[in-house]
Amino acid sequence: MSRWVSFGCAILLLSLFLHASFSALEYQWNWESALRYKKKFADGWIATLWISALSLFFAFLIGSLVTLCNRVRFLPVRYLSMIYVELTRGTPLLVQIFFFFYVVADAAGIQNRYVVGIAIMAIFSGAYISEILRAGIEGVGESQLLSAKAIGFTEYQTFRYVILPQALRSSLPALAGQTANLIKDSSLLSVIAISEFTLNAQEVNAITYSSFESFFPLAFGYLILTLPIMRLSRSIENRLRFET
Amino acid sequence: MQPFGESVNGVMRLFSFLPYLSKISICGLGIALMFLLGCSKGRDTQILVVGMELSYPPFEMTDENNQPTGISVEMAQALANRLGKTLRIENIPFAGLIPALKTGKIDLIISSMSRTEERAQSISFSNSYVHTGLCILVSKNGDSHSIKDIDQPGAKVAVKQGTTGHIYANANLKNAEILLFDKESAASLEVAQGKVDAFIYDQISIYLNWKKHSDTTRALLNPFNSESWSIGIRKGNDGLTTQVNQFLADYQASGGFDQLGDKYLSEQKREFKKLGFPFFF
Image (cartoon, rainbow over all chains, first blue to last red; front, top):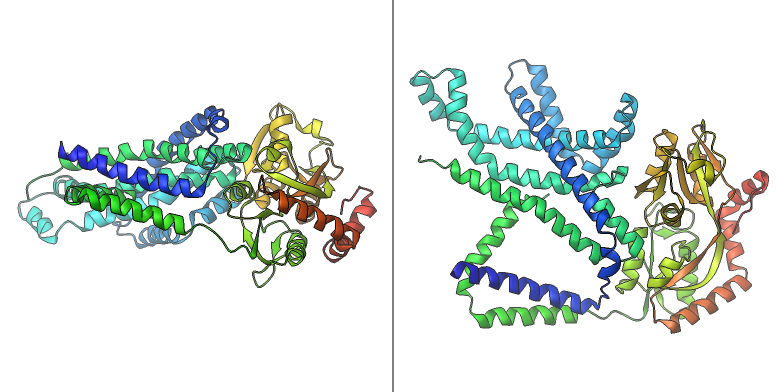
């Protein structure tokens, strides 16, 4: 009960703040014209959902693969994955989008901008995911690995029953954060005219000259996508909790 | 980028503190916030804030020292001198100019903006100072020669977000797929690489983009519609509208526009004469 009161207080405080901000702005609200374009918002939202879901799948694939490559004994593979991670994490996503779409995809003859967009997001997020997984794996104590060896676990068994459960649990919050980032970062794909949520909202903005009337639905739409991920990650985290 | 998880954590932590805060302190905080916001309003009236997107040479651009320059900048300076105010230029993306004007962040828009009915519903416009029209950049191998050739099923047409090309395409292109770009350079690159069939923009930009990609693109430089550029002013600001209109008339009469045209557009003027197309400035 007191939790709900506190929650209500926080919401009230937030609305008070927003109300004060907007009354200071003297903004003329014009929801009607923005609402006329609700189909545009819906189409964009669905596009963002698909792009995010597909690139998330491939990002996890790439991330896991690169994490494995980092542990391979053949050095060139290891360096290759290291260079990939550092270059991807160290350069702006905007530059990567332009580079992949107008240089790499053009040379490869891939014309579908959605395919390229999903590939770019997967490659970008894959680098972060591989680092998160690496940190999770390396966070498992040396003594545990030795104990596993002492009781005669094979390499596979050590990975499956000792490393994986702990690594997964410790990297879950960061993975959920990265997933939310991927969803929000996909808005940058608008620069190559991928008709996703942000671009559609901006178009409504440009057509109707309303700004906040299209930005608020935009923020809300992204929240609908990102909040469940946070909740899901929390509940998986709780399920994976174990005594140490 | 901030991991979202952390900020949610932060919010949750905030909730757990709340029961300890008394109601009075919450109210106090709210009042303090409103007071703060109230104070932040009001701006120096001796400064004329002009909004433009500095990515439209030779009208709005930046020089080597990252200072705003171009025809519109010199116009804005002359206007500010006339009004006896100090000029401040705000660099704002084109689609964001009208919202910025409406919310009072800027006083005027001088950004090669055409007067349209839709725009006139949300802001006021001065008298026009330039007459121009939309043209088309097509790929070199294509056989399009007019706007009709382009509006075919399966065709892709690039436009820049919020420009009159965008408005025109939305209203008039029934068959072609319209692709929105934020950057003019990306849109012309799409034509050059054959990713889209055409790019609709104003005459001078199409000319400049064609020059940049002359071996892969073709420019249809005969405008297929006509429009005129005006200075954007907030609705209800009639005093300023009168002053701006007076300034434009005097500037025209004293040959200010001709000087700017000679300074920034002499090459284009010659080229257009040679090609036999009407040129506006």
